[in-house]
Image 1 (cartoon, helix red, strand yellow):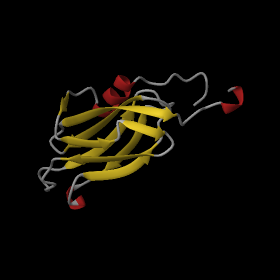
Image 2: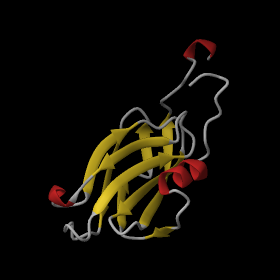
Image 3: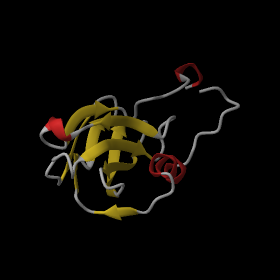
Image 4: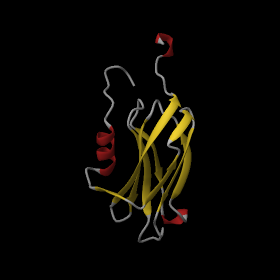
Length: 131
C-alpha cells in the first residue's frame, strides 16, 4: 500500500463486503485467543451454524481487522458441497485490535462475531528501518 492510499476503516471494509446490508450477531462461532504472544501467526477458526444444503448454505466467510495495514484479512468461498461451514487459518496481527468474522448465507443474510485480541509482540511492521 503506498502512502497516497488511505486504509479503509473496519466499518467501511465490512460495508463493502456486505453491500451495505444489515449484519446480525449470531450463528458464527469465532475461535481466536484473546491474548497472543506473537502476532505473526495467530490461529483462527470460524464455524457457521448452517445445514449446508443446496437451499440453505454459507456462500462466504470473511475475516476483517481493525488496525492492520489492510482491513480485509481473508475471504473463503464455500458451497453446499463443502459439507460444513468451517475454516481454519493463521493470520497476522499488527497490534492489539478487534477482529471480525462474517458469514454470507445463500438467502443473502450476513451474520457476524467479533473478538478483541491483545498482542504482546506485534507483526506487520511496515518500516522496521525507522524503529
